Image 1 (cartoon, protein in one colour):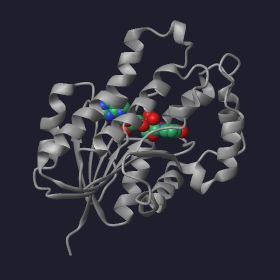
Image 2 (image 1 turned 90 degrees about the vertical axis):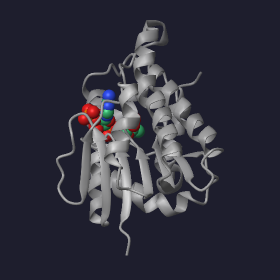
Image 3 (image 1 turned 180 degrees about the vertical axis):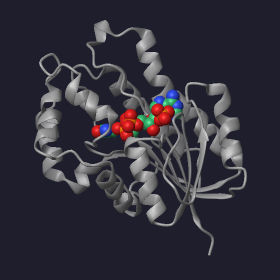
Length: 251
Ligand SMILES: NC(=O)c1ccc[n+]([C@@H]2O[C@H](COP(=O)([O-])OP(=O)(O)OC[C@H]3O[C@@H](n4cnc5c(N)ncnc54)[C@H](OP(=O)(O)O)[C@@H]3O)[C@@H](O)[C@H]2O)c1
């Protein structure tokens, strides 16, 4: 039987690393890219890739996937948060830096995949609740994840035999979460209080739990039209989702 193949970006840490382990456990061959490299062992092919270096992305992926004719799953997971700030204090350069990784690098990857001739069943974009919440302080990140959702929707018109979906995974313990719980200012940016309370109450998912939740949801995602966005909490943790929407900052 042909093995299942997955490509994942940003699998050196956090959710991407958790997803890589979960896919390895399910006997996938995982093709990964990041700057620090993935230290997991097993059926894994790993390559250095700085997604800021737009010129190198296609050639790097071509090298990584040179013997691959089909991908069952692509997870565009790599992302950065930027600093929580009021919009008026956020420079165009700071917005651009977050957009470069969270949106434009993924545009280059979509274009590479379209031209590669590789058969692809499913593409998952790791988005965020921030794409729709519009809470104070989440400027660059919220803009980028909102744009990422639209990027997926637009590319869905061009990938005829591939199901594309953007998902918000919920709260996941990672370096990003460490910043939100220890460094960012929860008085200035009150939406942080719910996140910090969730962490204190042990309600933040480990990377393993979050990865398992995503892989469990995978077959169900195909019930949504290609190009859709779904917050996994809507279908898997409705009480948490209701609380999230209730505590959304009023505009
Ligand atoms: N944590 C949460 O609660 C949460 C919630 C919603 C959505 N998300 C999303 O989940 C995804 C993973 O985040 P995480 O929480 O797991 O954070 P993380 O631990 O900081 O992981 C981010 C990953 O992105 C990669 N990355 C960042 N900049 C890169 C670059 N220039 N080139 C290549 N790779 C780069 C990192 O790899 P290198 O540094 O090795 O390059 C790392 O593997 C992100 O898209 C994030 O927006 C997270």
